[in-house]
Amino acid sequence: MDHNFRKSGNFYISKAGDPGGNGNPDYPKRELSGNEDSIRVVLGTGTYQWPTAFIYGRQGFNNVYMQADGRVVVLGDGQTRYQWLTAGGCAFEDLRFEQFVGFQFAQSPSNPPTYRRCEFAALPATAGSANSGVIGGCTFEDCVFENVHFSNGQTPGLGFNQGGDPSGALFTRCLFFNCTFGSAARVLRQCYFDPYTVGWGSDQPQYGTEATGNNVDPAADLGQGYGLRLDNQPVGHLWPRNLSQPPRFNAPQQHDYSVQAGSPHLAADIGPRQYRQGRSFVVQAPTAGQLADPATTRFVPADGDDPVALLSVAGVLEGSEAGALAIRAAASPDGTASLRTGRVRHSAGLPREISYLQTLGGNNFNTSYPALESQLNPNAPEVFNNNVPDLGAYPAGHAGRNPNRLSYRLRWSTLPDPRLDHPEDWATGTELVECEWNARPLYNPATNIGNGRPDFVVAEGRPIICTWYQLEVGLTNLYYH
Image 1 (cartoon, rainbow, N blue to C red):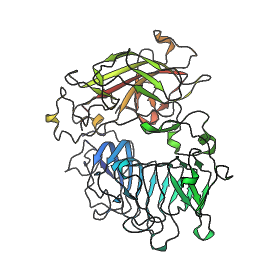
Image 2: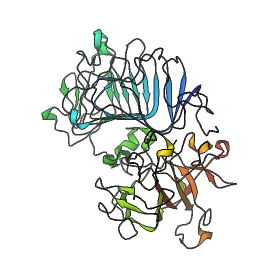
Image 3: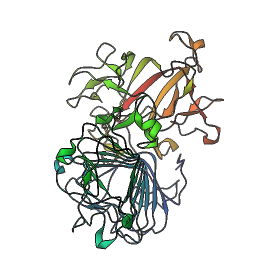
Image 4: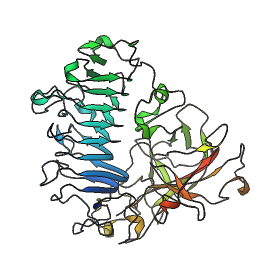
């Protein structure tokens, strides 16, 4: 089949793949096969639920470099503590791990893995007791940890310094929410610790450690052991080599770790660099069972500014008990609905680039349910696929399914006060360009094809620079292979 993979590797996995696939981009597999070694794996957009041992324990899986091409979520089994993720020498980029009870991040201090721009979310039910371990030398860059409680080096967790290895783990520009360090980390550099995290580092020369440029939330109660400790001594709020200031996140409760203007993280280079886009908006959904329309639904900015009104709703969406929007059963023959906003201010002065737009909250896009496309009924939305943020719809075998790219549409203006009903005020007139969620929006100026479409030409991609933009956000229940 055709494909639209945009990252390079020598083994490809896609929700459109087949168990009999050979791992090429035109014929990808649907999961790891278990006999590859020293390969570069490209993992297409979707939710994946694989066996308890993600890579560790599969024959030959060493030195695997795995990178997400689109939004990728890996689900745990919800019951295994210290769940192995990797064997030796592996690297992971841009993956989110959730529904795990805990993690085992490394196998051997002699060949430790590296994690870049990954998110690790353990279930809150495990809070307060050790659920994860890591052997010394493991590296984390621009990562996020939620409810991860590292053991103190005792089995079965293995901890930071198992076997007397003094190196410890290395954390750079990471965020910690309700986490616990059972023993010292080697490097804690430009990280953030929320009020309920217990961090531990050391300045002893024999450990070669470093804890500099971090931000310990001022709400942390040092007297109760929260915050950051060095050599078992609490670090005060005025410790000169670190900060203690409110981080000014946009919407961390929706897994949005970007920060508002004026955040101390910007100047100090604290936290994951990929999340430093500007403003964030949360859909203010109607109550459960209530239909979405311009009177009940708005886009609310996290910075407290005035909400952005909806102009129209196509298809039928309703509020859910979880406070989100979902496709209503038997509402639309194509299983898709959309919301169109009014204009959204991006820059109060000179035009600037839209660097990143991401979807927030819990999105379902697991095409393993139902097992066969013939079993999918658009009039009875599958609960694993009933709120997928996507506007692209492609037939089986089309490049747009391999991998599918979650998408939205927008148009933009560089004027100080563009009028919605005047096409000449907008760069693309009445046309909205389809771009990819959780990525830098790019488009081909000659065709107005954005990077949310499979026919986007990467070499011709240009950034979107504007003062205002208008969004069309789609939800579907037909996200399938």
